[in-house]
Image 1: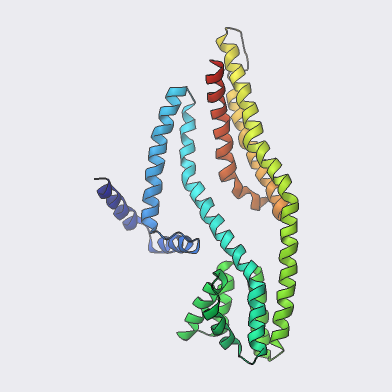
Image 2: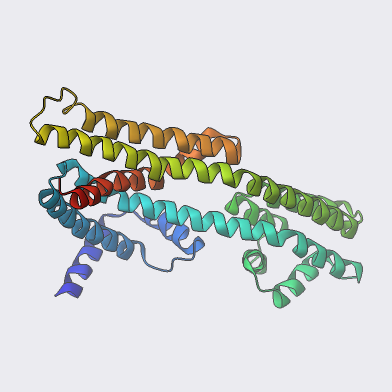
Length: 306
């Protein structure tokens, strides 16, 4: 029965999803190492959202939480998008880390007399990593008649890597001009190694600041605001007049949301020198902050018997 429901939903999604969108999503999934059909993934996400929505409604009535808390289940597709982007960024980072050694090996083969295309072909048979997988695809395209330089640059444009673009452009220019390509490759490899080392050192130096921002946004502030709201409820239950009883819930949730957005912007500035690049972390930090905010109230109210 369950299998038939999934197949039915798969067919509905497949029939209503355009070929262009289906291709783009499927390509993103394959690039990130998730080998599943687009319609099947969407079906699974919808079913998980439905189950979590029902459970969250039950939790709302059981612990007397606000009904809007159930909307947190709609963060499931956002978290999935974040995960896919994370896998793609990790894959790109692997490619850039492998690039200097790849260029050095390419240079060694050219020094012993192999041509550029022959050197690429030889490396494709002996190396097993993410960058070489992309090179293999480019070489396969050349076997079907596509120009070698176009296939090579397509690898850089597809992965949206400035290092790949710069390296491949210099390789193609040196190849076409007949210059000392092996020397150019060695120089590029050394420059890339130094650049990647500086990038690692910079990332390590700012991680403490990033961890402080994340902990304050996800744990410290939501917990403190949750305790303030719990104390406000306690005062109301005890029969005392509390003019802030209706204001605290809205203002505290608003503060959690605003702080999450600001912290993510600061993370973008610290890590990438661009606040816009940090906004993407909102889709993971904001739901976690709200979870801590509500569950801290549930746990402490159970302990205190409020």
